[in-house]
Length: 265
Image (cartoon, rainbow, N blue to C red):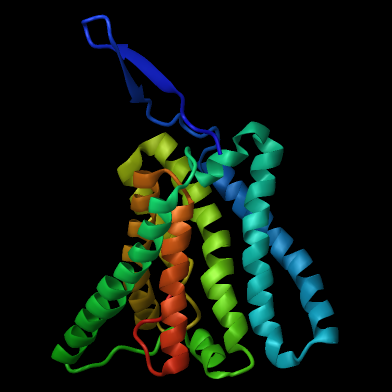
């Protein structure tokens, strides 16, 4: 991945001081992100449909749904990379940030994922539950498809792989690597973080009641904000990928082990 070159600045005494320049803006914009998403959806429908038809011939029908999820997420990431490769060939490395990752990024990514579970799933989830009870109600069960797959011993390993590996790769490439950076280029960091996080949260709404989807958005929105913020802070996509993967891994383990919080992404 490309590193931003250093700039030599004099200190007034004939010596030079080295300062890192802010990373240059990415060449793509929001419309490119929309076009890449549309292209990804077309690829997922066409290639994904063909893959599902093939899977139906060679695997158990119980595994079709989790396998389809794996294929769709991988196609999302591949479509984003291919779009940038065709449109802005030299800019593909910028999808992954402006600098090379290091060991500290790995530690921050895993630690950030654990912290996100504590703050969002346990903290915010508990607060939402207490608020619902205060008004004499209870939170609806959300993301029932994930819960059903987690309860199936045959599907659980694929769900784990999908949530901990495929979702972080595919979704981070689009939401942070492409969408956030496109928004940030046009409207600045604050708007980029907020809008990309909102789109990320809304993308996880599923068929169901309005209240259930509101709970999903309320839980995932803070995660999206954190993922975009830490990407901007560290300038390496590996960090949000690891945060996302760790968060999802713990969520799926909680679902498999028993009743969990407001399920992850």
